[in-house]
Length: 248
Ligand code: NAI
Image 1 (cartoon, helix red, strand yellow):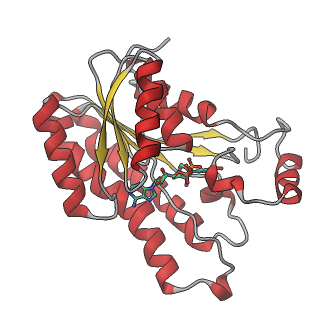
Image 2 (cartoon, rainbow, N blue to C red):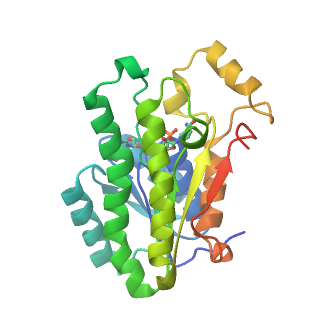
């Protein structure tokens, strides 16, 4: 439906879950997808196989988003190979769930370094190549809990709310350069991140979701592809909520 032919896209945390579905969907729309992963090379290779199986193209781009030097080296190398970066999806994220009384400074630091630092480092590395082309799309993967809050997720919800601030600020900073910056805020999506929840906890979430079910990674990916497309050219600084109506 949306044509991303000729575009070079980077998807962080592309080895599984929402990142994998997004990598495949962008490739199906015609983009060449650089699939980032940190440690699980086998899973990232499987994403690449699925991209190629769907008739798309891409390559692996390993780096730790929390390491600014590694981010710069990897993105610079990608720009040298491909001449451009058009689309950045800041999807990599971790959640360390603890009630306030149990949350440690290490939990906070790790969450911040990955979810917030990672997004800023990647945006910083990609923004110059985007400015050169006077075109760019940055999509940050936030979360419903950034806006609704959730007991036990003080570190995670703070980091995902920070991503909304980053989205709005970068949208204003780079609008004049032809670069849009938006966020998607998924609700409860069936991935490894949510796999460990008990059946009772899952049922409680379903009961709070007007559409009455858990979401699929492909349903988040579809929103990312739209925001990355030419058709979304007048949308910037916005949050697209993909949450089954859980938070309206
Ligand atoms: P996931 O745990 O399956 O995927 C997260 C990905 O990020 C993994 O591939 C992981 O290796 C990668 N990653 C983590 N730290 C990294 C680092 N330092 N450098 C590079 N890659 C790193 O989880 P899922 O569900 O696919 O999550 C994707 C994004 O969506 C995350 O940002 C998450 O917070 C967000 N999200 C997920 C929801 C859900 O219900 N599954 C709901 C709302 C937001």
